[in-house]
Image 1 (cartoon, rainbow, N blue to C red):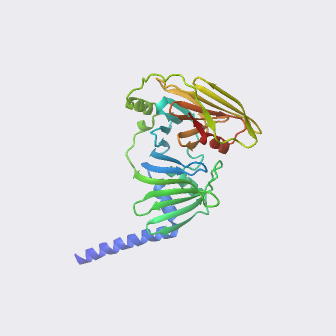
Image 2: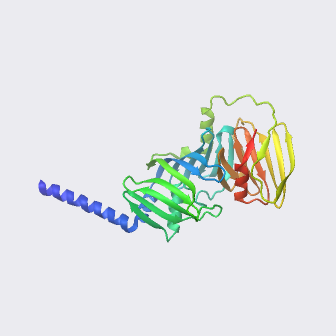
Image 3: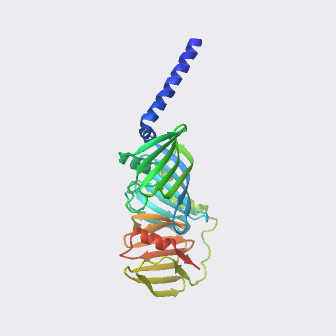
Length: 326
């Protein structure tokens, strides 16, 4: 009996030593191989985007079903919720509070690095042949380059719990090691039983609509919307300001021409499909959807649109994040 016990302890020690040896030799491969092998997962995380004027905080939940079904829900402190869904039909951005559905770039999410998506992180790390790692107790820390063309973040730092096999946090940093994005993982459920119906955009919108206490609220009275653009591009001046019932228009001209339109929107009784977008950014109120010559976001029952043939992504985000309304 003692021989059997000693043999078991010896085998256990051998297995543990072997695992530790693999981690010390190639921790990146160990972590990436495990996370890539998952057929599904659900996670919840807190995301902070660090901005010069105001940090943006969001709660993000992700459901993933292999090979490429995603359901990502963004919610802020005001309860505003938007959902990105990828299924066999394409990629959609859902705004349940207004019953609006937007078509999105079909290359998402692997067209860029996303700090809250495991596949995007693993893909980024694998692409960097010069990625490094270190072990701090049970925590594996991976340092890698980022290939975000439209972002000032140039590298990532990924913290992985080797004992419990789950992500701890991710940092996106610029060249000076300033934090641009922080994602802290609260829950991670690997190989969770998920069904394809969970990723059906129409079913999601129906589910959200049925959960509302009253979808037939009376329309608000027509009121004027006074807005202020705190950020104005260099070499640009406000050339026209039009304010009418339920909409306001600001026209800027100069080195760059652009127009800001804010208008009241109604809650639609059925899902409305809108324009197609190819990128997005994060605002305090939710997602800023970025198209070819226009961008749009929502604050309660207000739709804010920015039109221009000249603005780049950073300028659009700067303008949108510094608009105030009363």
